[in-house]
Length: 348
Image 1: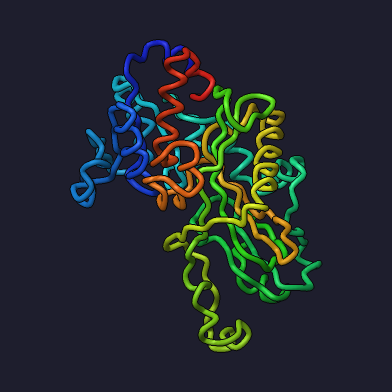
Image 2 (image 1 turned 120 degrees about the vertical axis):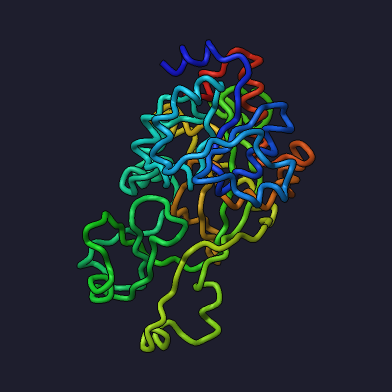
């Protein structure tokens, strides 16, 4: 059905929710000559007036994000191509987003593998990556991190040291996973997989790019060490929090880049086998240990907010094309696919 809709499109309108990474999505789309549509609640967000190059051409104003489904006909009338990001999927819900009958950049089938931590682990283990050990409640004998399923910007994590702490804090009405707490340096690696591009780092089909690397600034875990040990803070009722408040740019020592590309390649090849491929941007969330081993603790299978650091390019993207953001890279992929008559390979 989506393929039939695409055949009726004349000039796509790049569309997303006004949050998360929308500024660079709209900016990138404009640079590639696309019209843009921003979805917002109640009224157009005023702060877009401060960024005229990233302000959408038009706003769709709703009372609730669940109304997006009811606006399907209007979105189709405008030749909308939806760009998913973390807030968009979280606000609407993964299941509803998957069923939205509006052309969407990327492979929507990835949502069932990304939003379920058990399936996500099956994918990453099948790709041959090193993951933190998972523990059952009665196996907890070390520091662990407890994660609820779904993307909530770090608000769904907490650290525990034993079973008693988990039982005291966990919400048993939600699905959760217990992982060992791995010490090392965090690197969030921004990849882009194109099934239609032929030149570059070649895979069995298409090519892989690295567009940037960041680290998240999380409140209050990044500063809590100033007050004392976690044990001392726990006694006065202060617990670590992983709510993401911003991002910092990073580069890796160059000798680690081959491993970075190898991990991305393995993830894409396994995704092609499992569900037809993780198309477009994705991010491997990793810890590099003192032994220079990457432990992958999560994947985000769409544009991540850390890419907002690199709207004018990154130390990696500049080697591909000066000033290349992930938002613009998405727009370039849509443009190239349209010109090649292969939109159905990147739009679902």
